[in-house]
Length: 276
Ligand code: SAM
Image: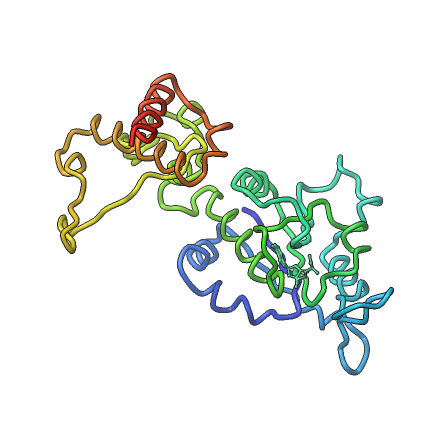
C-alpha cells in the first residue's frame, strides 16, 4: 500500500478527482491512502499568509518556505541532510514544477514501489527554491507547458502511479498491456485472466481499440478482429502498435523492447509508408 500526501493551498481542488473511478475504488478497497494538507493550516498570522513578493523584484508572488516546511515536518519529513537512507522508509518528496525532470511511466513505476509519495503543489511564480533544495529528492514536470498550479500535476502523478499498484486495476497485468507497458519478457506468462491475444507493450504505444457497432458512419471494424483467429489478432495488434508509435512517437522506438519479428514488421511498415 502506498500513501500519497498532497500539500496545496487549494485542498478542495481534489474533492471531485478522488470521488470517481479508479482512484475512488482504490481508496475504498484500502489499496491506497491519500492525505491532502492545506498549507494555510501551517500559517500563524491573522491573514494565513502563504505567499510573498519575490526578492530581486519581478512579477507575481512566491509560496513562502515556512508553511511548507512546517507541513513537511508535521508529516515526519526531515531535511535531506538529516535523513538516514539506511533507516528511513522508502519515500519521495516531490516538487511539481515546470522546471522539473519529465514525469514518465518509468518514473511512475519507481514511485509505485515506494511506501509514501509527498507531492508539493506550487502556485503563482512557484515555491521558494530553498524548499526544493532542503527537502525534495525529485522535481517533476508533467509536460513542456506551464500550468497555473501544481494541483493538476499532482493529480496526474498520483493517478498514473496509483494504477500501477498491485490490485488497483482489475487485472494484475493490465497496465503492462497499455501504452508504455513492459515487454513480454518481464511479464509472467500465465497470469490468470490476461488475454493471450495481447503482448506486453514493450514501451510502445497501445494498439487501436474498437467496440460495437461493427459499422459506424460507414467505417467498419477491421475484419481481423471479427474473425476469431487469436494469432492473427495478436499479429495485427502488434503491427498497429508499431505503426502508431512510428507515426506519433518515433522517439520511443529507440528504447522499445522489440523482438526480431517486431523489427521485421517495423521494416515492412516503414517501407510501406515510404512507398506511398
Ligand atoms: N514561474 C514558473 C516557471 O516559469 O517555471 C511557473 C510557475 S506556475 C504558474 C505555478 C505552479 O504550477 C508551479 O510552481 C508548479 O507547481 C505548477 N506547474 C506549472 N507547470 C507545471 C508542469 N509542467 N509540471 C508540473 N507542475 C507545473
